[in-house]
Every structure is written in structure tokens, then in C-alpha cells.
Amino acid sequence: QVQLVESGGGSVQAGGSLRLSCAASGAGTYCMGWIRQAPGKEREEVSTINYYGTATYTDSVKGRFTISKDNAKSTLYLQMNSLKPEDTAMYYCVAAYLCNWYSGGAYWGQGTQVTVSS
Image (cartoon, rainbow, N blue to C red):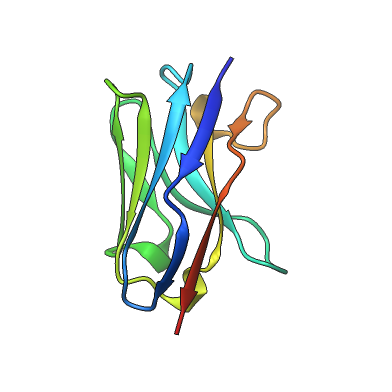
């Protein structure tokens, strides 16, 4: 059974930084990532990383966010720099085979709130 527990969210001013962490037990070789959802908006895949360390980013965060994982600690990270008000959202840690987040075999954390003020 996979368990994902996020931490590190909070409130910052525009231009600030936050680092999200996701303690991921049982994720093994799953693809992992971060998905966010702002009020009134659809869910957005922010970044993914596969077992081999290959990362992807949505265009709006490229150059500002960095995804990484520490396999020894079974922890996924999202370093977020130069934060903008439009980054405000609930951020979810996800794990799934082949990054298929919406399959029956996907796992989601409870989410951590990120709020960026202008």
C-alpha cells in the first residue's frame, strides 16, 4: 500500500520560495509528481519524475520549480522559487504506474496549501 504525506506548504509573498516534501512509503518504482488545483480551476499537472529521474514541468513553472527525489529517504520534493500569485493552489503529491494519475491504481496525498500574495 502506498502512502503519501505532503508537507511544506504555507503563505509567502510573490518572489519568495517554498519547498514541498512528500514522504512516500511503498511507492517503489512508481512515477511520481505534483498536481495542483486552484479554487474554481481544473487540476493541473505541475511536474513529474520517473523512477530513472527524468523530470517534466508544465510551461508556467519551467525555470522556477525543481522536482527531485531522495530514494533512500523515500521522499519527493518540489523546490518552488520566484513564486507568483498564480501559483496559489492546493498541491497534491501523486504516485502511479506510468504517471497515470487518474487510474484506479493511482495514489494521492491529502494536499498542502500554497498561498502566494502580491
